[in-house]
Length: 344
Image (cartoon, rainbow, N blue to C red; front, side, top):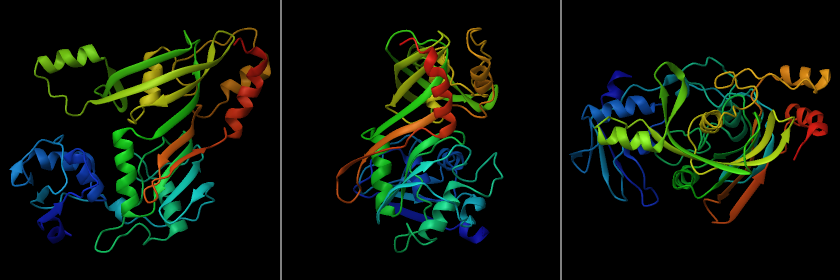
């Protein structure tokens, strides 16, 4: 292992990639975390065309990336074993697999989780361990984007390296469609609202993200602050229904796809996602809600957030595809109870 990690390696950026240096290396080096790769870049162990560059340096087709020695790998990912799962498949061909992910299923093993049953493990069992492996390249679990453990809905998985690169570019360039549905705590003002901010790890709560306004971000940049880990995020909220002036069903359309983006932006509007124990707040339900409804809302075991619709360009044919996943039973049953109290 030590000999492998100290071996120099050279990568050539393909014609279909245009993005950050650190993101490219995460894609090309399965099992190596982004934080470790960023540390190696900052330490001067990685060069682009012979020159030291920052983690956010934009790569171009044909660039040569020299790695002095591979950083420590995430062996939990490399040693992942297939697990037979009952996958809800919405579409599948030789390049992509589109799934309806259930709430409660974690995407993949990583820091903070010891779960053996993951979506990646189920995908490996379904398509085979060698699927997604191009000649001379390492195994890729195929994950292009992620849904939180408690979030349900549409998810696309790449089955080949070509599909992985093509889909990753679409997500990065924001050319694909991502729509979510959520039950929010509070009454949303106006039919539409857009939130733009920079997300970053909350220094007081490391598993949570904080939001920095565009104005504050610009001010910090002028002051010379190091904001390399801050990520721009933009979410459109569309109000669909309000119940008892205390709850809102909203459709969210993403222009970026950051970790916890909807949850953080909903909270910034004063409308945290119902059931979100990380970002939510205790809400006093209207006295007019019947006991059955109040109990159903209080018994919700997860945040009510669902990835309803996903659209992308097929990586091989170029065809525009879109897939929709119905609301899961637990979410649907709550909305059915709320319907009598709809005010819009």
